[in-house]
Amino acid sequence: MWKLAVPPWELIARALIIYVFLLVLLRLTGKRQVGQLAPFDLVLLLVLSNAVQNAMNGGDNSVTAGLLLALTLIVLNVGMANLTWRSRRLEALLEGKPRVLVHNGKLQVRTLARERITRHELMAALRDAGMPKIEDVGVAVLETSGHISVQPRSRQ
Image (tube, rainbow, N blue to C red; front, side, top):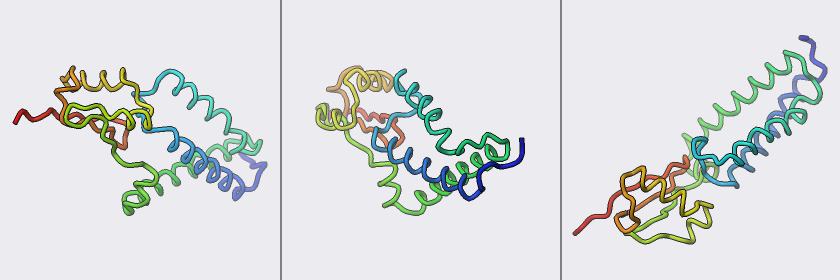
């Protein structure tokens, strides 16, 4: 139960490789928040975790290996948070940049397509912000968190 079947350094290296791989893979897929996940996005995340489990633990199902992997992943996550907090360049690389989806009442179709945001998803965010018409929007921005911020159009 407690005895490791794989050397500790190998478990740490496996966790690091899988963490970086998934970070890059998920970064390339978009900026949706967990609350904005479509059912197929959620299923993908659940299946991904199962798919990489054996790659991380190398067949070692001991409690010690699980604890070591969990500790490694948490340390990696805290380290990435600190690095992105200190470096704007790394933050932009890992988290992306905010993208304008609507500007002065005009839909930015190319940006929507690039970010894989459907018109339905955008309209839901606009309604949540109390603006059911695109023409009333000054700017709608897809934030790096996946949230869509909406500002009303000025009537000057």
